[in-house]
Image 1 (cartoon, rainbow, N blue to C red):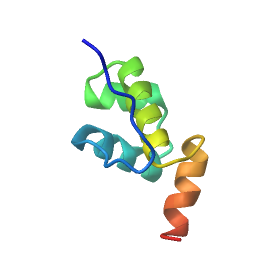
Image 2: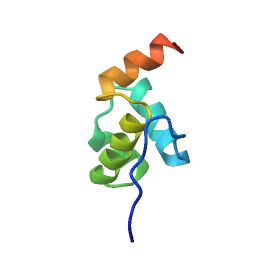
Image 3: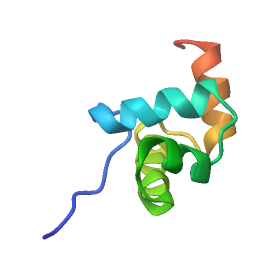
Image 4: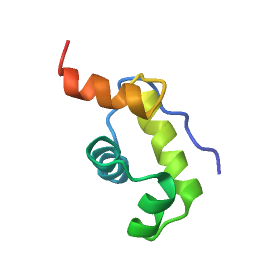
Length: 72
């Protein structure tokens, strides 16, 4: 089964949106997020990478700054 690569600007999935909210509102690491959601760390990293691509940011810190800065 082939997976499609996400593109900048695409809408987040329900799970990605859930993880997105955790990423921007807490300082929990991937391991802690995985344990709380009963998924693997690898799955959290997969979703986080998709979020970063869709939100057009390089990582979590930039994601937080962009979200707090609001629409531009």
